[in-house]
Image (tube, rainbow, N blue to C red; front, top):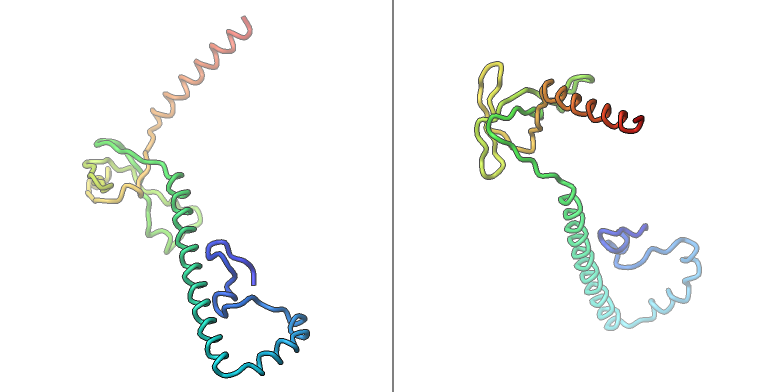
Length: 172
């Protein structure tokens, strides 16, 4: 009964080719029923063919509305995706896709660290495990950069020195 934006109409109308009528509305349709019964067979056949054609047009229109809606939603989704670039020798985390079948409450979904040994042209990346030196080729969407403690500590030192300079400047 409710109007659906992706298909541009109500599901009831797609199935039956007409709008839904509440039971209260049906009680007052006695005149309409009399007119329908008194219709000739030829006119009823033509009317039925017209109704079937209208229903087919309605379904085609809903299909077009749904496909344009999906295209718009895909554009919105793709606009939010950030491009990841990886370099050879960079440390990365690998997403453990098998964990979703046997989830652990506090188990991390990321394995690693791995080192990138080759970057392909189509998003395929060859990585090497640091522990057992096994190589595997994975999709770049399953990787995220690994940050060492030295990277984090180096950033904090710069931030602290910036804060000290700004505090001295404000007080002085």
